[in-house]
Image (cartoon, rainbow, N blue to C red; front, side, top):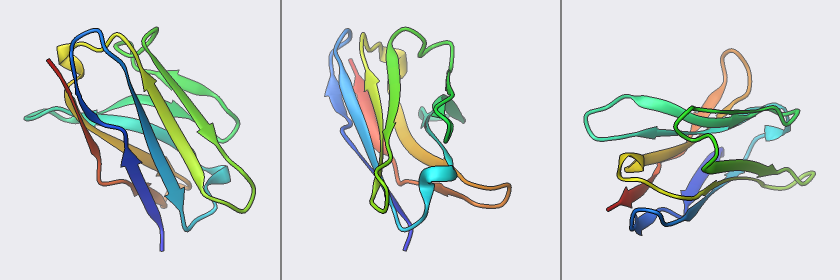
Length: 118
C-alpha cells in the first residue's frame, strides 16, 4: 500500500519558518523524482521544488533562496522528503503536497498539509 504522508504545516507569521516532512512508503522511491507542490485557493497546483533520484534540485523562482528541499533515502525503509521554508510570506499560503514521479506512468501524491502565513 503506497502512502505519502505530509506533516509540518501550520500557521505562522510573515517572516517565520516551517519545515514540512513527507514520509513515503510502500514503493521503491529510490528511483523516483520527488517534490513539493502547492495550491492556493482558486489557483492551480504549482511546483515549488523537486529533487531527482540523483539529487538534482530545482526550485520555483519564488522559492529560491528561501526554501531548501532534501530527502533521506535509507535502504529498504521509508523515504522522507523535507522542505525547509524560511522568510515565509503571505503569498506562500497554500496547501502543500508531496509527490513522487517514478515512471512515465507511475506517480503518487499525498493528501497535503496546509500552510498559512499571516
